[in-house]
Amino acid sequence: MTENKPPPGGAWDATQYHVVEPGDTLSKLAKKYYGDASLYMQIFEANKDQLKDPDLIKVGQKLRIP
Amino acid sequence: MKKTLSVILLAVLAFTMLSCASEKGAATAAIKAAETAWTAAKDNVMKILPADGTTVEDAIAAAKASLEQGDAKAALAAVKDIPAKIQELTASLGDKEIELKGVWETLNANLPTVVATVQKRVDILSKARSLPAGLDQAAFDQVKTDMATASSTWVEAQAAQQSGNIGEAVAKAIDVKGLVVKAMTALNMPVPPALQ
Image (cartoon, each protein chain N blue to C red):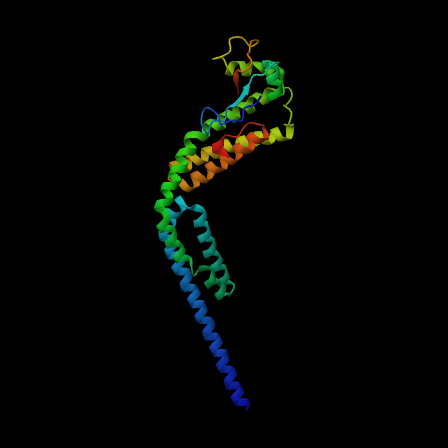
């Protein structure tokens, strides 16, 4: 689910976020946002502070989509 | 009777000629007054209110063109209010400069980060084997062009600010803001509230 609430970084924060839903994988998110599932590592790298393994994401996690 | 008519016609002709000469003189004097006022104010006005300054310059140029074409009335109409307009602009420069400096500081502190975020997305999409739904190749090419323009315009804005042309700096920064919003919309990225 794409977040449209005011961003945590303030009124100028242009970061796009995605709240993980059941069935989501980084590959699916990469396909959705970039059109190419193979770019999933771009999302993993941007969220290393909360992800240890690209195959392990949890429902409700709020991921940055660079 | 014929003689009387001739005298009247001559009188009318003389009056008309005097009147025209008087209008031409008035227009010439008005243009000179406008140019003198503008010369004194130009540097400061163009640094802070360049669009208003251009309006003044256009009015003076239009008046000169009208006078050259023999239309003293139009020339006079074009410049008669210019000295007052220049005075008004000069009086507002202090407040306007403070306002523009505030706008610049906000844009300068925030816009580069937004540009970098959008550029990062463009860089990632440039590696994609296909584009996401809702973005075709033509739209993406336009985004790339717009972001390149935004980057070069931002450099120009900073140069303008550094040389004291705060009006031009803010105008260019606002152009950058517009290009970035356009790109974000095309890329289906959420536009931050401050840019809406």
